[in-house]
Image 1 (cartoon, rainbow, N blue to C red):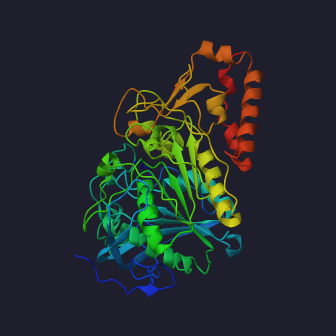
Image 2 (image 1 turned 135 degrees about the vertical axis):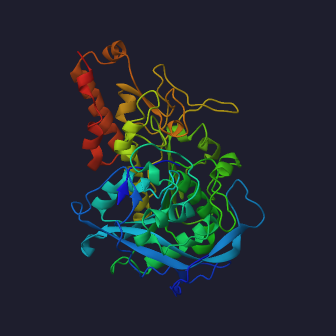
Image 3 (image 1 turned 180 degrees about the vertical axis):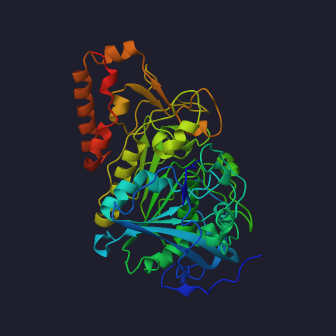
Length: 483
Protein backbone atom coordinates (compact mmCIF):
# COMPACT_ATOMS: atom_id res chain seq x y z
CA UNK A 1 0.00 0.00 0.00
CA UNK A 2 1.41 3.40 -0.94
CA UNK A 3 0.15 6.80 0.18
CA UNK A 4 1.01 10.19 -1.24
CA UNK A 5 3.09 11.73 1.53
CA UNK A 6 6.55 13.31 1.70
CA UNK A 7 9.04 15.79 3.62
CA UNK A 8 12.47 16.03 6.09
CA UNK A 9 8.21 -3.62 26.30
CA UNK A 10 10.16 -5.35 23.45
CA UNK A 11 8.94 -8.54 21.86
CA UNK A 12 10.75 -11.85 22.15
CA UNK A 13 12.64 -12.06 18.87
CA UNK A 14 14.37 -14.79 16.87
CA UNK A 15 18.04 -15.34 17.55
CA UNK A 16 20.54 -13.61 15.28
CA UNK A 17 22.48 -15.50 12.68
CA UNK A 18 26.01 -14.70 11.60
CA UNK A 19 28.20 -14.03 8.62
CA UNK A 20 31.87 -13.03 8.45
CA UNK A 21 32.68 -9.33 8.36
CA UNK A 22 32.87 -6.19 10.45
CA UNK A 23 35.83 -4.61 12.11
CA UNK A 24 37.54 -4.14 15.46
CA UNK A 25 36.19 -2.07 18.30
CA UNK A 26 32.48 -2.31 17.55
CA UNK A 27 29.60 -4.69 18.03
CA UNK A 28 30.40 -8.36 17.46
CA UNK A 29 31.56 -8.29 13.83
CA UNK A 30 29.63 -11.33 12.71
CA UNK A 31 26.11 -10.22 13.69
CA UNK A 32 23.63 -9.92 10.84
CA UNK A 33 19.92 -9.24 10.96
CA UNK A 34 17.64 -12.24 10.70
CA UNK A 35 15.84 -11.60 7.41
CA UNK A 36 14.25 -15.03 7.12
CA UNK A 37 10.62 -14.08 7.81
CA UNK A 38 8.62 -12.57 4.98
CA UNK A 39 5.88 -10.13 6.02
CA UNK A 40 2.49 -10.87 4.50
CA UNK A 41 -1.17 -10.13 5.06
CA UNK A 42 -2.86 -6.90 6.01
CA UNK A 43 -2.99 -4.28 3.28
CA UNK A 44 0.30 -5.21 1.67
CA UNK A 45 3.58 -3.27 1.83
CA UNK A 46 3.17 0.29 3.07
CA UNK A 47 5.31 3.18 1.90
CA UNK A 48 4.72 6.92 1.80
CA UNK A 49 5.22 7.37 -1.93
CA UNK A 50 4.16 10.12 -4.29
CA UNK A 51 5.83 8.39 -7.26
CA UNK A 52 4.36 5.01 -8.17
CA UNK A 53 6.17 2.54 -10.40
CA UNK A 54 4.77 -0.41 -12.33
CA UNK A 55 7.25 -2.97 -11.05
CA UNK A 56 5.95 -5.78 -13.23
CA UNK A 57 6.41 -3.69 -16.37
CA UNK A 58 9.96 -2.92 -15.22
CA UNK A 59 10.62 -6.64 -14.75
CA UNK A 60 10.78 -6.34 -10.97
CA UNK A 61 9.12 -7.98 -7.98
CA UNK A 62 8.60 -6.68 -4.46
CA UNK A 63 8.84 -8.58 -1.18
CA UNK A 64 8.88 -7.43 2.41
CA UNK A 65 10.70 -8.97 5.35
CA UNK A 66 11.10 -8.54 9.06
CA UNK A 67 14.63 -7.66 10.14
CA UNK A 68 15.27 -8.89 13.66
CA UNK A 69 18.15 -9.05 16.09
CA UNK A 70 19.94 -7.28 18.91
CA UNK A 71 21.59 -3.98 18.02
CA UNK A 72 24.10 -1.70 19.71
CA UNK A 73 23.87 2.02 20.19
CA UNK A 74 27.02 4.12 20.04
CA UNK A 75 28.76 6.85 21.97
CA UNK A 76 31.42 9.18 20.67
CA UNK A 77 34.90 9.06 22.19
CA UNK A 78 36.91 12.27 22.12
CA UNK A 79 34.29 14.56 20.62
CA UNK A 80 33.06 15.12 17.07
CA UNK A 81 35.71 17.13 15.18
CA UNK A 82 34.64 18.95 12.05
CA UNK A 83 36.94 16.86 9.83
CA UNK A 84 34.68 13.84 10.45
CA UNK A 85 37.40 11.67 11.97
CA UNK A 86 35.18 10.41 14.74
CA UNK A 87 35.67 7.49 17.08
CA UNK A 88 32.56 5.58 18.13
CA UNK A 89 32.29 2.70 20.55
CA UNK A 90 29.31 0.51 21.47
CA UNK A 91 27.10 1.76 24.25
CA UNK A 92 23.84 -0.06 25.06
CA UNK A 93 22.14 -2.97 23.34
CA UNK A 94 18.51 -3.72 22.62
CA UNK A 95 16.35 -6.09 20.63
CA UNK A 96 14.65 -4.85 17.49
CA UNK A 97 12.24 -6.09 14.86
CA UNK A 98 11.79 -3.72 11.96
CA UNK A 99 11.03 -4.18 8.27
CA UNK A 100 12.90 -4.09 4.99
CA UNK A 101 11.26 -3.68 1.60
CA UNK A 102 13.02 -5.38 -1.32
CA UNK A 103 12.52 -4.58 -5.00
CA UNK A 104 14.61 -6.80 -7.24
CA UNK A 105 14.75 -8.08 -10.81
CA UNK A 106 12.29 -10.91 -11.40
CA UNK A 107 14.95 -12.73 -13.41
CA UNK A 108 18.20 -13.50 -11.58
CA UNK A 109 20.17 -13.09 -14.80
CA UNK A 110 19.21 -9.40 -14.87
CA UNK A 111 20.82 -8.64 -11.50
CA UNK A 112 23.76 -6.22 -11.77
CA UNK A 113 25.37 -7.28 -8.52
CA UNK A 114 24.66 -3.89 -6.89
CA UNK A 115 22.24 -3.44 -3.99
CA UNK A 116 21.09 0.09 -3.14
CA UNK A 117 20.17 0.19 0.56
CA UNK A 118 18.03 3.26 1.29
CA UNK A 119 17.60 4.54 4.85
CA UNK A 120 13.90 5.38 4.50
CA UNK A 121 13.04 9.01 5.17
CA UNK A 122 10.65 9.80 8.03
CA UNK A 123 10.50 13.61 8.03
CA UNK A 124 6.87 13.47 6.85
CA UNK A 125 5.93 11.12 9.69
CA UNK A 126 5.89 7.87 7.68
CA UNK A 127 8.51 5.77 5.92
CA UNK A 128 9.08 7.28 2.48
CA UNK A 129 11.41 6.31 -0.37
CA UNK A 130 12.63 9.54 -2.02
CA UNK A 131 15.78 7.94 -3.43
CA UNK A 132 13.73 5.25 -5.16
CA UNK A 133 11.40 7.99 -6.44
CA UNK A 134 14.30 9.90 -7.98
CA UNK A 135 16.39 6.96 -9.16
CA UNK A 136 14.03 4.09 -10.04
CA UNK A 137 14.49 4.36 -13.82
CA UNK A 138 18.25 3.99 -13.43
CA UNK A 139 17.92 1.26 -10.80
CA UNK A 140 15.59 -0.87 -12.91
CA UNK A 141 17.32 -0.43 -16.27
CA UNK A 142 20.65 -1.41 -14.71
CA UNK A 143 19.20 -4.37 -12.79
CA UNK A 144 20.14 -3.13 -9.33
CA UNK A 145 18.31 -4.37 -6.25
CA UNK A 146 16.75 -1.65 -4.09
CA UNK A 147 16.18 -2.25 -0.38
CA UNK A 148 14.35 0.21 1.86
CA UNK A 149 15.11 -0.08 5.58
CA UNK A 150 12.75 1.18 8.29
CA UNK A 151 15.70 2.42 10.30
CA UNK A 152 14.03 5.03 12.53
CA UNK A 153 11.46 4.52 15.24
CA UNK A 154 8.81 6.99 14.04
CA UNK A 155 8.35 4.91 10.90
CA UNK A 156 7.72 1.80 13.00
CA UNK A 157 6.05 2.88 16.25
CA UNK A 158 5.11 6.50 15.49
CA UNK A 159 6.11 9.82 17.00
CA UNK A 160 6.29 13.56 16.43
CA UNK A 161 6.05 14.68 12.80
CA UNK A 162 8.75 17.07 11.63
CA UNK A 163 7.22 18.30 8.36
CA UNK A 164 3.45 18.36 7.96
CA UNK A 165 2.51 17.71 4.34
CA UNK A 166 -1.08 18.12 3.12
CA UNK A 167 -2.67 15.70 0.73
CA UNK A 168 -3.93 12.12 0.62
CA UNK A 169 -2.49 9.99 3.42
CA UNK A 170 -1.57 12.91 5.67
CA UNK A 171 -3.78 11.50 8.41
CA UNK A 172 -1.34 8.60 8.78
CA UNK A 173 1.64 10.81 9.62
CA UNK A 174 3.20 9.98 12.97
CA UNK A 175 1.26 6.77 13.53
CA UNK A 176 3.92 4.24 12.56
CA UNK A 177 3.60 0.94 10.73
CA UNK A 178 2.30 -0.92 13.79
CA UNK A 179 -0.77 1.32 14.00
CA UNK A 180 -1.22 1.83 10.27
CA UNK A 181 -1.54 -1.91 9.57
CA UNK A 182 -1.53 -4.02 12.76
CA UNK A 183 -2.34 -7.20 10.85
CA UNK A 184 0.89 -6.93 8.89
CA UNK A 185 3.19 -4.99 11.19
CA UNK A 186 1.89 -5.62 14.70
CA UNK A 187 4.93 -7.69 15.68
CA UNK A 188 7.45 -4.94 14.93
CA UNK A 189 9.38 -3.16 17.69
CA UNK A 190 11.99 -0.39 17.65
CA UNK A 191 14.27 0.54 20.56
CA UNK A 192 15.03 4.11 19.42
CA UNK A 193 17.09 5.94 16.83
CA UNK A 194 20.35 5.49 18.69
CA UNK A 195 20.23 1.86 17.53
CA UNK A 196 19.35 2.72 13.91
CA UNK A 197 22.97 2.77 12.73
CA UNK A 198 23.71 -0.76 13.88
CA UNK A 199 20.35 -1.94 12.56
CA UNK A 200 21.44 -0.68 9.13
CA UNK A 201 24.78 -2.47 9.47
CA UNK A 202 23.13 -5.74 10.44
CA UNK A 203 20.68 -5.53 7.54
CA UNK A 204 23.64 -4.89 5.20
CA UNK A 205 25.44 -7.99 6.48
CA UNK A 206 22.36 -10.10 5.95
CA UNK A 207 21.92 -8.81 2.41
CA UNK A 208 25.59 -9.37 1.59
CA UNK A 209 25.12 -13.00 2.55
CA UNK A 210 22.15 -13.24 0.17
CA UNK A 211 19.32 -13.09 2.72
CA UNK A 212 15.98 -11.72 1.46
CA UNK A 213 17.29 -11.79 -2.12
CA UNK A 214 15.99 -15.16 -3.33
CA UNK A 215 19.44 -16.53 -4.10
CA UNK A 216 20.99 -13.38 -5.56
CA UNK A 217 24.56 -12.76 -4.39
CA UNK A 218 25.52 -9.08 -4.11
CA UNK A 219 28.94 -7.85 -5.13
CA UNK A 220 28.46 -4.24 -4.03
CA UNK A 221 26.33 -2.57 -1.35
CA UNK A 222 25.60 1.16 -1.58
CA UNK A 223 24.09 3.03 1.38
CA UNK A 224 21.75 5.83 0.31
CA UNK A 225 19.79 8.53 2.06
CA UNK A 226 18.03 11.80 1.27
CA UNK A 227 17.37 14.77 3.57
CA UNK A 228 17.09 13.57 7.20
CA UNK A 229 18.42 10.23 6.01
CA UNK A 230 21.37 12.06 4.43
CA UNK A 231 22.19 13.51 7.85
CA UNK A 232 22.23 9.88 9.04
CA UNK A 233 24.60 8.94 6.20
CA UNK A 234 27.09 11.54 7.47
CA UNK A 235 26.98 10.08 10.98
CA UNK A 236 27.25 6.56 9.65
CA UNK A 237 30.18 7.28 7.34
CA UNK A 238 32.19 9.21 9.89
CA UNK A 239 31.54 7.07 12.96
CA UNK A 240 30.16 3.65 12.04
CA UNK A 241 31.63 2.69 8.67
CA UNK A 242 35.19 2.67 10.13
CA UNK A 243 33.99 -0.01 12.57
CA UNK A 244 31.82 -2.12 10.29
CA UNK A 245 33.03 -1.63 6.70
CA UNK A 246 29.45 -2.65 5.90
CA UNK A 247 29.08 -0.69 2.64
CA UNK A 248 31.17 -0.33 -0.49
CA UNK A 249 29.92 3.16 -1.37
CA UNK A 250 27.64 5.95 -0.17
CA UNK A 251 25.07 7.96 -2.11
CA UNK A 252 24.20 11.09 -0.13
CA UNK A 253 21.47 13.45 -1.32
CA UNK A 254 20.53 16.81 0.23
CA UNK A 255 22.48 16.67 3.47
CA UNK A 256 22.67 19.58 5.87
CA UNK A 257 25.93 21.01 7.17
CA UNK A 258 26.00 18.69 10.17
CA UNK A 259 25.15 15.09 11.04
CA UNK A 260 22.33 13.21 12.77
CA UNK A 261 23.10 13.16 16.51
CA UNK A 262 23.40 10.03 18.59
CA UNK A 263 20.50 9.68 21.05
CA UNK A 264 19.60 7.53 24.02
CA UNK A 265 17.29 4.49 24.24
CA UNK A 266 13.70 5.15 23.24
CA UNK A 267 14.50 8.54 21.75
CA UNK A 268 13.92 9.79 18.23
CA UNK A 269 16.56 11.60 16.21
CA UNK A 270 17.11 15.23 17.17
CA UNK A 271 17.10 16.78 13.72
CA UNK A 272 16.47 20.25 15.11
CA UNK A 273 19.60 19.86 17.21
CA UNK A 274 21.47 18.73 14.12
CA UNK A 275 20.53 21.92 12.28
CA UNK A 276 22.06 23.96 15.11
CA UNK A 277 25.23 21.92 15.59
CA UNK A 278 28.70 22.40 14.11
CA UNK A 279 29.36 21.62 10.45
CA UNK A 280 31.20 18.42 9.58
CA UNK A 281 32.74 17.15 6.39
CA UNK A 282 33.09 13.52 5.35
CA UNK A 283 36.28 12.00 6.69
CA UNK A 284 38.95 11.41 4.07
CA UNK A 285 40.69 8.29 5.37
CA UNK A 286 38.26 5.59 4.21
CA UNK A 287 38.17 3.48 1.08
CA UNK A 288 34.41 3.59 0.42
CA UNK A 289 33.69 6.51 -1.93
CA UNK A 290 30.98 9.11 -1.27
CA UNK A 291 28.88 10.82 -3.94
CA UNK A 292 27.11 13.87 -2.49
CA UNK A 293 24.31 15.49 -4.54
CA UNK A 294 23.17 18.87 -3.22
CA UNK A 295 20.36 21.04 -4.54
CA UNK A 296 20.59 24.80 -4.75
CA UNK A 297 18.28 25.26 -1.78
CA UNK A 298 20.37 22.91 0.39
CA UNK A 299 23.35 25.27 0.27
CA UNK A 300 21.87 28.11 2.31
CA UNK A 301 18.91 28.61 4.65
CA UNK A 302 18.02 26.01 7.25
CA UNK A 303 20.23 23.26 5.80
CA UNK A 304 23.20 25.54 5.09
CA UNK A 305 25.24 22.71 3.57
CA UNK A 306 27.75 25.14 2.05
CA UNK A 307 29.30 25.29 5.53
CA UNK A 308 30.37 21.67 5.03
CA UNK A 309 31.76 21.98 1.52
CA UNK A 310 34.92 20.00 0.88
CA UNK A 311 37.16 19.49 -2.15
CA UNK A 312 36.60 16.61 -4.52
CA UNK A 313 39.11 13.80 -4.13
CA UNK A 314 39.77 10.22 -5.20
CA UNK A 315 37.11 9.17 -2.64
CA UNK A 316 34.63 12.10 -2.76
CA UNK A 317 32.44 13.87 -5.31
CA UNK A 318 30.12 16.83 -4.73
CA UNK A 319 27.60 18.00 -7.32
CA UNK A 320 25.71 21.20 -6.52
CA UNK A 321 22.82 21.51 -8.97
CA UNK A 322 21.69 24.99 -9.95
CA UNK A 323 17.98 25.74 -10.20
CA UNK A 324 16.89 22.85 -7.97
CA UNK A 325 15.27 22.48 -4.57
CA UNK A 326 15.36 20.07 -1.65
CA UNK A 327 12.06 18.57 -2.83
CA UNK A 328 10.29 19.38 -6.07
CA UNK A 329 7.34 18.72 -8.33
CA UNK A 330 8.73 15.41 -9.54
CA UNK A 331 9.24 14.08 -6.02
CA UNK A 332 5.84 15.24 -4.77
CA UNK A 333 3.92 14.00 -7.82
CA UNK A 334 0.18 14.53 -7.48
CA UNK A 335 0.70 15.87 -3.96
CA UNK A 336 2.23 19.06 -5.39
CA UNK A 337 -1.24 20.36 -6.23
CA UNK A 338 -2.17 20.30 -2.53
CA UNK A 339 0.59 22.70 -1.50
CA UNK A 340 0.23 26.48 -1.88
CA UNK A 341 3.53 28.33 -1.58
CA UNK A 342 2.36 31.41 -3.49
CA UNK A 343 4.00 30.37 -6.76
CA UNK A 344 4.43 26.92 -8.32
CA UNK A 345 7.07 24.84 -6.57
CA UNK A 346 10.36 24.00 -8.27
CA UNK A 347 9.92 21.88 -11.40
CA UNK A 348 13.56 21.33 -12.29
CA UNK A 349 15.12 18.08 -13.57
CA UNK A 350 17.06 17.26 -10.40
CA UNK A 351 16.10 13.59 -10.69
CA UNK A 352 17.84 13.36 -14.06
CA UNK A 353 21.10 14.66 -12.60
CA UNK A 354 20.64 12.37 -9.59
CA UNK A 355 20.47 9.33 -11.85
CA UNK A 356 23.72 10.35 -13.57
CA UNK A 357 25.30 10.65 -10.13
CA UNK A 358 24.21 7.14 -9.21
CA UNK A 359 25.68 5.81 -12.48
CA UNK A 360 28.87 7.68 -11.67
CA UNK A 361 29.07 6.06 -8.24
CA UNK A 362 28.34 2.51 -9.42
CA UNK A 363 30.85 2.85 -12.28
CA UNK A 364 33.35 4.15 -9.73
CA UNK A 365 32.85 1.03 -7.64
CA UNK A 366 33.05 -1.32 -10.62
CA UNK A 367 35.96 0.22 -12.54
CA UNK A 368 37.80 2.48 -10.11
CA UNK A 369 37.30 5.47 -12.44
CA UNK A 370 36.15 8.50 -10.48
CA UNK A 371 33.16 10.47 -11.86
CA UNK A 372 33.41 13.86 -13.51
CA UNK A 373 33.80 16.81 -11.16
CA UNK A 374 31.09 19.45 -10.98
CA UNK A 375 31.43 23.23 -10.55
CA UNK A 376 30.16 24.78 -7.32
CA UNK A 377 27.19 27.13 -7.16
CA UNK A 378 28.44 30.67 -6.62
CA UNK A 379 27.66 32.16 -3.21
CA UNK A 380 27.86 35.60 -1.67
CA UNK A 381 30.28 36.13 1.17
CA UNK A 382 29.41 36.86 4.78
CA UNK A 383 27.97 35.24 7.88
CA UNK A 384 24.79 34.21 6.05
CA UNK A 385 25.79 33.49 2.45
CA UNK A 386 23.25 33.53 -0.32
CA UNK A 387 23.21 32.28 -3.90
CA UNK A 388 24.65 34.67 -6.47
CA UNK A 389 22.19 35.20 -9.34
CA UNK A 390 22.09 36.75 -12.78
CA UNK A 391 19.75 39.56 -13.77
CA UNK A 392 16.87 37.11 -14.25
CA UNK A 393 17.34 35.65 -10.76
CA UNK A 394 18.93 32.39 -11.93
CA UNK A 395 21.77 30.92 -9.89
CA UNK A 396 25.32 31.28 -11.17
CA UNK A 397 27.68 28.31 -11.31
CA UNK A 398 26.94 24.76 -10.29
CA UNK A 399 25.90 21.77 -12.37
CA UNK A 400 23.59 23.22 -14.99
CA UNK A 401 20.77 21.89 -17.16
CA UNK A 402 18.91 23.35 -20.19
CA UNK A 403 15.90 24.67 -18.18
CA UNK A 404 18.44 26.79 -16.25
CA UNK A 405 20.65 27.90 -19.16
CA UNK A 406 17.86 28.25 -21.74
CA UNK A 407 15.13 29.48 -19.41
CA UNK A 408 11.45 30.02 -19.85
CA UNK A 409 10.98 30.05 -16.07
CA UNK A 410 13.25 31.06 -13.25
CA UNK A 411 13.92 27.78 -11.47
CA UNK A 412 15.14 28.59 -7.99
CA UNK A 413 15.89 27.06 -4.63
CA UNK A 414 14.35 30.12 -3.01
CA UNK A 415 10.80 29.48 -1.78
CA UNK A 416 7.65 31.27 -2.83
CA UNK A 417 6.07 34.09 -0.80
CA UNK A 418 3.82 31.88 1.35
CA UNK A 419 6.24 30.51 3.89
CA UNK A 420 5.71 27.30 5.80
CA UNK A 421 8.08 24.56 6.89
CA UNK A 422 7.41 22.53 3.78
CA UNK A 423 7.49 25.53 1.42
CA UNK A 424 11.00 26.36 2.66
CA UNK A 425 12.08 23.06 1.08
CA UNK A 426 10.24 23.28 -2.25
CA UNK A 427 11.84 26.18 -4.10
CA UNK A 428 9.93 27.98 -6.82
CA UNK A 429 9.16 28.16 -10.53
CA UNK A 430 8.53 31.75 -11.66
CA UNK A 431 7.65 32.44 -15.32
CA UNK A 432 9.84 34.93 -17.11
CA UNK A 433 7.91 37.96 -18.41
CA UNK A 434 6.68 37.58 -21.98
CA UNK A 435 8.84 40.43 -23.21
CA UNK A 436 11.93 38.82 -21.68
CA UNK A 437 11.11 35.52 -23.40
CA UNK A 438 10.73 37.37 -26.70
CA UNK A 439 14.06 39.12 -26.13
CA UNK A 440 15.85 35.84 -25.45
CA UNK A 441 14.25 33.85 -28.27
CA UNK A 442 13.19 35.76 -31.37
CA UNK A 443 11.68 32.59 -32.82
CA UNK A 444 10.48 29.24 -31.55
CA UNK A 445 13.08 27.56 -33.73
CA UNK A 446 15.82 29.62 -32.08
CA UNK A 447 14.66 28.50 -28.64
CA UNK A 448 14.51 24.84 -29.66
CA UNK A 449 17.95 24.99 -31.25
CA UNK A 450 19.50 26.55 -28.15
CA UNK A 451 17.71 24.12 -25.86
CA UNK A 452 18.83 21.09 -27.86
CA UNK A 453 22.43 22.31 -27.93
CA UNK A 454 22.34 22.83 -24.17
CA UNK A 455 20.91 19.34 -23.66
CA UNK A 456 23.70 17.79 -25.71
CA UNK A 457 26.28 19.78 -23.75
CA UNK A 458 24.82 18.57 -20.44
CA UNK A 459 24.86 14.95 -21.60
CA UNK A 460 28.39 15.20 -23.00
CA UNK A 461 29.57 16.70 -19.71
CA UNK A 462 28.23 13.63 -17.88
CA UNK A 463 25.61 15.40 -15.76
CA UNK A 464 22.63 13.69 -17.46
CA UNK A 465 22.71 10.18 -18.92
CA UNK A 466 22.29 9.60 -22.64
CA UNK A 467 19.35 7.37 -21.82
CA UNK A 468 17.66 10.38 -20.20
CA UNK A 469 18.24 12.87 -23.03
CA UNK A 470 14.65 12.50 -24.21
CA UNK A 471 13.36 13.15 -20.69
CA UNK A 472 15.56 16.26 -20.53
CA UNK A 473 14.15 17.49 -23.84
CA UNK A 474 10.64 17.05 -22.42
CA UNK A 475 11.32 19.96 -20.06
CA UNK A 476 11.43 22.32 -23.09
CA UNK A 477 8.37 24.53 -23.58
CA UNK A 478 8.49 25.85 -27.15
CA UNK A 479 4.77 26.65 -27.08
CA UNK A 480 5.56 29.57 -24.75
CA UNK A 481 7.73 31.25 -27.40
CA UNK A 482 5.51 33.37 -29.63
CA UNK A 483 7.97 34.25 -32.41
